[in-house]
Image 1 (cartoon, rainbow, N blue to C red):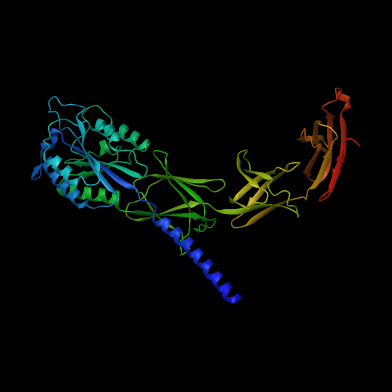
Image 2 (spheres, helix red, strand yellow):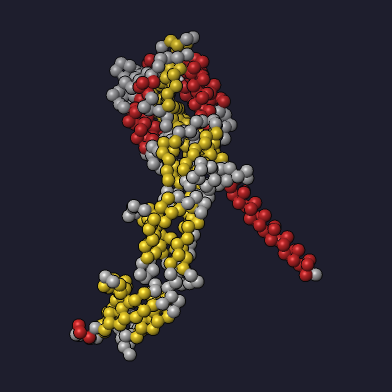
Length: 463
């Protein structure tokens, strides 16, 4: 009967554990993927009426662009919009504010975009910088969106604006990712490479290919593997938080805890390839790698040096130091990189550190070496206990007695209990005290005592 009950209990525990694991897996699968929003900024200026192979540039670009839109039907987590410029005012004289969001973002607006393009007659000039600045308002607020601009043009800025500055500012604010530009008919790379990623389309085939590559980069998943390297160059470090920042905007894109997969190698991440990343690995102290550019459509491997070892503190058979803080600094630096509790084992990058243990008196240990996969233990003497008793409230301090004289350690509490229990390192001490009701300085009391390891010393200021 007992065996049967134990068996049932074990099976219940296994079921609970399996249920929790399944719940975690389900939650992982339920993490929502971002919505990709592509704004097409389309040139409808007068120059687009020029001949290009078999037809005008506008007609050919519209036809090929419409074919691309057809291929995007039923693409999940995708919305598109259309902004035109140069289509409302004739040249001459032209209008440097001639731009309009003709079709805003929605779930199913491809047929509407195609219809709008069929009714357009190119007529004006090219206010490219102003069009890009206006595009900032085309993207409704969204917490989990990728905002992409694709500019299709056959010319350069004609209104003294600076598309490069506008694009840089929109990226810095995190409104859009780095834009794509398709230049029709001739090479405008010199003018547009500062705006975004430029594609030259000297003929129809190159235009079609450029659109295909851009959409592939925008929509196809790209993977990345972060190798946290030990001192021998092996990708063995793991279980560390990593923050991936957008290098341009400085905004956090991903906050992740590094993991190894079932094969014991760093986990594969699906990640946005259009962002230039700065990665901060939150070791102690942190390490970072900046300006990481990913190649779309392939598996990218990023290596970051993060060799680590362990640091522990110990006092012989004494639990009273459990929550005592220890300040950790890199050797040669005054910057505090961590405050480690005495009973805690913590990982640090390999190297040398100084520790300041906030016992009484403080203990400073210099040049502690942290080695790969090794636990370095710092041991301090076993403390003793001093019970300081008074019969009245007052003002007093505790001092360490040494060869140089007295070193202040602690100001006594003005406590109604008239007693304090202090954990002190072995050594010689003195308490200097005056009752708060005494009006004469010479009524000060001094009491010397010695603390031995593991022993309690009673210090009575008034016998």
